[in-house]
Image (tube, rainbow, N blue to C red; front, top):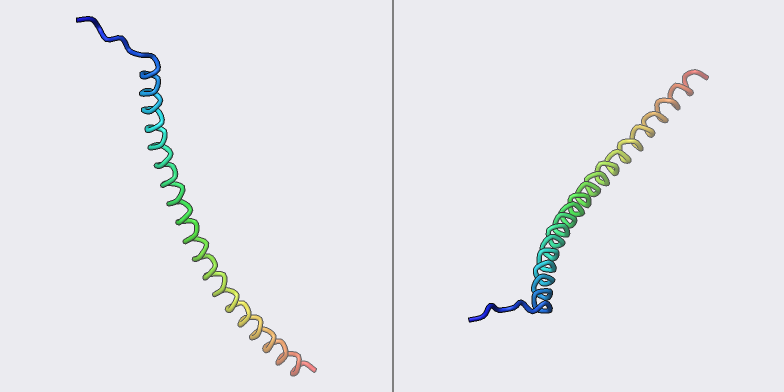
Length: 78
């Protein structure tokens, strides 16, 4: 029996298929990491927005109280 010769075209197709499948696997892992990171960033942005809204309300109350105290001092000084 003679030795089978590898047909260069078939070997190239198989090697290309293996490289593509490993590349696709690597890309899918990267995409999964990116999606996870984006989800975490969205969560952080939502938390920051809620904190900012809380401080906006607190800031307006502080300004309101400060203006009231200042008007009382102005009333008694004059």
